Each structure stands twice: as C-alpha cells, then as structure tokens.
Image (cartoon, rainbow, N blue to C red; front, side, top):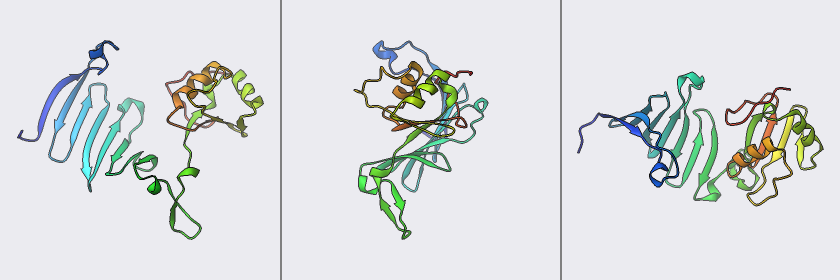
Length: 199
C-alpha cells in the first residue's frame, strides 16, 4: 500500500483521442491522495475533490477563480441515489427508488413523494435570443409568455424542431435530457455556451 499523502503531476488526455474521435489535448494536472480526500487540480484553475462523508461519496467540482464562481457544484453518490447541487441547493436528484425521490412538504407538514409533479428548467437570459425570435415566441401557441420572458418546452429527440429559430434550436438541443423547459428571462444569467445578441 502506498504511503499517504501522495502527489503526482501528470497530463489528462481526452478519452476519445485513443479511439481517434478527438485530437490529443492533454491538460496538465496534479493528483494529491490523502487519507480523507483525493484532490485533482488542473493548471487552468479547475479542480475536483473527492471525499467520503457519513457513507456518501461526495465529489466537489470547482471552476477557476477567474470565473468569479467561488463555490463548488457537488455530486453526492449515496447507496440508492445521486444528488447534484451546490452547498446551498439541491438541483437534481436521481434515485433507483423513485418512491423516495422528490419528497415535498404537504399541508400537514409531512413529506410525501410527488415525483410526477416536479419538472426541471434551464434558466437563461433573453439576451441569448434575437429580437425576431422573441417576437416569434410571442406568437407561438406552445410558449408561455410573462412580463419578463418566456417558458419554452424542450421537445423530445424525435420532435420536429425545424420550426424553431436557429439559436433556439441550439439551446433546446443542449437542454434535451437535462431539463424539461427553458426559462428565458431578462434577469436570468447568461451562459457562455450560447451566443448573446444585442438589441
């Protein structure tokens, strides 16, 4: 058994490169093994910590300090479920026991499962839409419009998405399988994966 702590510098390759599906693009990294934690830090400032707490394996993901995002996004791996969230909020729960997922306080104050009533949405700035697209959404019968934005259903993989404006198709395709809806709101955050339009 290796004495701990143990530290090693290495380069992390793209796993697809070995299959010829991507270019080799190694990212310099450092792996630090301790008795209570495994730390993986990258030269660009990103980091992953893996630890165990009360039987739950917890993975913390950090962005570089330059992004201004200080807190981690956490993945908790329990015996029968995964939970993704921040230190303050659970964003997604995936369980092998659906009857234990999504417990919501009832009027009596007790928790009852209501998974069929819980839907997720991607929160995005209306700045990711062209002005013409917002006018299109205002006319679209499948869109819910509010004073500050639009709620758009994410169509399934086999749905006809050709009717959607191009930038909206790109966003909906990215949200498919992750969120049920996209909430475009003038006060919502922007996402650097998508184009931003000035109008």
